[in-house]
Length: 279
Image 1 (cartoon, rainbow, N blue to C red):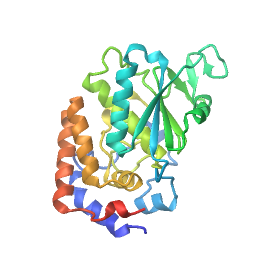
Image 2: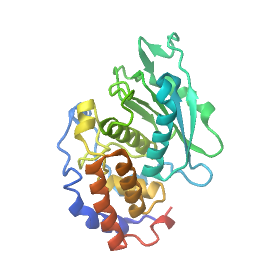
Image 3: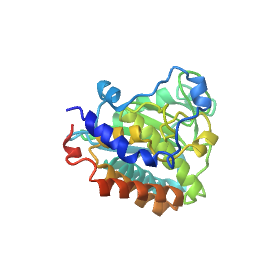
């Protein structure tokens, strides 16, 4: 069943929260370089028939590059916590080693994303929905762009580079965690079928630089938030509360306050009775 009335009620409910979430999207380097991207509302999202994590295929495998060294264990836990808070999906972790002398896998110091993503098949189990690779090295995709932050290939997997914001020894620093949180949740949402957002300032805006990562919000806009909640079978209030708790743990005070306000709104309004029964 397509819950278009539910969608409209949801937007009406949290429209007053849009301004703290950033307001209308004003464009970015990414949007100027990709003028063919257009806003996708919820109805068009459903029409595109994205794959959702359902039934047994409902887990995410987080694969960490061994080059992270001493922070690998801590990073695995933080990454799993982000995925579970954003998407309410169970996670498992694994390790991978990339041979930098392999010219088929590397172009200079940059990891070729297509070749890296091709190696994901061995990490899929019977319950795996998607796989995410984290690496401290630089990435280059097929289109010839250099030193990119990340790339997703829905629903198979995504690869995220932390090279531009070195996590060690500052893994616990709020700004490092904020950047990791934004980029990891952005790429994971792509795996659910979400395109870039072109209507609101939103974590799903396309980003070309670390400056744009820092200037765009962690929060999703109303459109993208509904897509994530519908895709992952979550009540919006539960999603907001999980995000609030993790922001509090990471010391992200501004984001914690915004999620607390959203959680309060959704709980008080009894937003979508039976929302999770939609499929």
